[in-house]
Image (cartoon, rainbow, N blue to C red; front, side, top):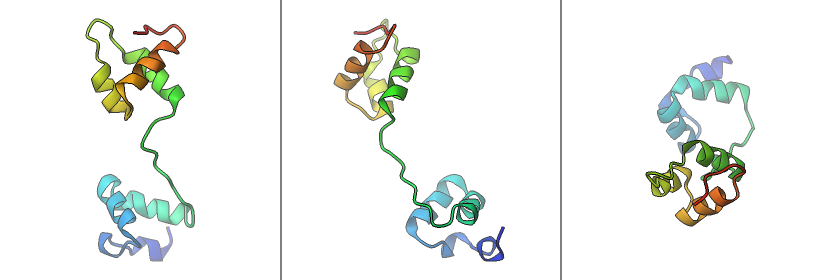
Length: 95
């Protein structure tokens, strides 16, 4: 690791995003990112891709308990979107 990066502390990280990231994943992990990924931009999406949502629903939906609301909350989508995804899931247990 570059000596400059190695000497960073949480207080002197370049911006608030890096400081928040250090709180979440640790200062050492942020230093590795800064050392190996300098100049790169990262975007963390709010929602998961539809293909992942379908697989998650297929694996975790339980028609006996109708656990649609907590699943919608976990996936960051509406209950209606959950039902739509269930309906379009091959082999799904659609509602």
